[in-house]
Image (cartoon, rainbow, N blue to C red; front, top):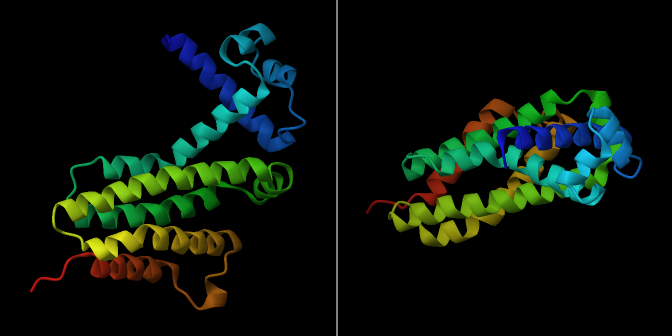
Length: 201
């Protein structure tokens, strides 16, 4: 695909994403996307067969955006312990930045009009993240740094832990639970590191 074609495709996805978020997927038509992107219907059909294909591409791209930072860390040259700690801190940062970037009206719009889309993005992002997290743990085990028994348990625990973190950020319920978000981040990193790293005899 040429640079111009890639740019056009990305433009169509940007417009579709905005329309899906503001109007809902069902109420967004191919004509709406064509008009809002200043492209003709013929141009849209050059890149996508139908609205479902655009929708799937939007979901895939948004999930990739969410996990990009994690992928960069896992593919870096960091040593296993540093990589693990950087990954967990980044996971906290992504949640925090996502919530802060969304205004109240946007959140209401997303939840009421496009809940299914958000859930698909979340599930796909979780699937992608699980693969990256397991790869990081397996690498640390292979290098003899991480305990294999603890490493086999951690990926599922990590996902459940961060579902709770996501909820606390969304509902702003840290205070009600008597938790300091900043110290909690450090505590989680320290706890997971101490649990996973092999003990020296």
